[in-house]
Amino acid sequence: MARVRRHIPVSVASAIAVHVVALILLIVGFQMRNDARGVNQPQVESIKAEVIQQDVLDAQRLAREQAQRQKAEQEAMRQAELERLRAEQEAQRQAELERQKAQEEAQRQAELERQRAEEEARRQAELELEQQRQRLAEERRQLEEAQRQAELERQKAEEVRREAELARQKAEEEARRQAELARQKAEDEAQRQAELERQKAEEEARRQAELERQRAEEEAKRQAELERQKAEEEAKRQAELKRKQAEEEAKRQAELERQQREAEARRRAEQERLMAEMRREQQRLEAERQAERERLAAIMRQEQAAIDAAEARQRQVELNSLTAQWSNAIAAKIQRLWRKPESASQGQSCVVRVNQTSGGYVQGVNVMQCTGDEEFRRSVEAAVWKADPLPQAPTPEVFQSVIQFTFVPEG
Image (cartoon, rainbow, N blue to C red; front, side, top):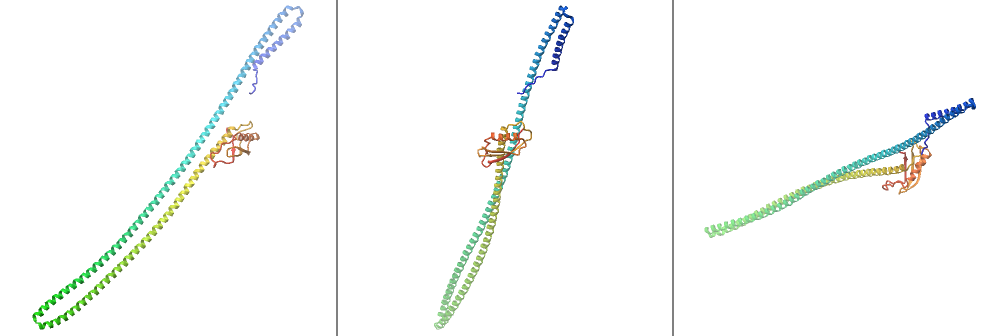
């Protein structure tokens, strides 16, 4: 508590001085009258003494009243000074409360801004991840569509091959059927011709025999000989005709077989050409599918790398946020426990290096590069030791056994 200095008003001091001077003058004047008049005036001296005595009493009374007023004024001044000190202390307390509220509000606003920034960063990262997932889904859909188209092309090629095989089988079956029909027709025609020739020969023989029998028996022998010769010649002719027909039929069958072989060769060549084209087309499609697969695989690798990078950036943002929260918590605890020395002034700071365990227990404090005096440096070091144990790191990834920061007093 500061001492209250007592001040006597000038008017009161002047009144006291006047009364003291008057009292002194009365006493001196009374003594001088006694010396001048001698012992012959006792009654006058008695009256004067009474007057002087009354004046003295009045002066004493006035002095006492003045002293009481002075004491009352001093008490009033002391009470006023006490009230003033109380008002100043209350004002300082209110100002400190306002400063703390403003500081807490500023910290809350800063925390809200940081949280909003982190939320925006997370939202942007999630948006980028979602866009990358959508692109990846689109690429996969395109890959599936390309595979589906390739499968359709393969099925179409398989259908063409199957139709070609069916056409080949059908052509072979038709060729075999035509050949069988031609063979049967040739056999039937040969049998029919032979039967006709036999019937004609028999009819002619019967007719000639009947004619020869009617002409004469003599002519019969001649005719018989002629008929025999004629029959032999006819037989030879018929045999020659059959031989020629057989040769013609053989030539025709050979030509037909040659044509069939040529057609088969052309069919096989065409089939081989189609199969070669199908193989080339399949190879081309397979090469295109392989190239598409490799391209999509490269795109997927790039997308995965982008996703990994985005996740790494998101994780780094989270780690930076956690590190900032941890650092702010440490600084806030040290700030709360710091006691401002009398020599401290605005703008002072210190670089502090702290060794700590994973549990936050302080193992060493090194205060460096202080802009304040030794007392300020010791106050900062004491605040760090008072903050032991420090707030623990939220995750092992954030923890650092040696941390360094700049301590700047608030307010």
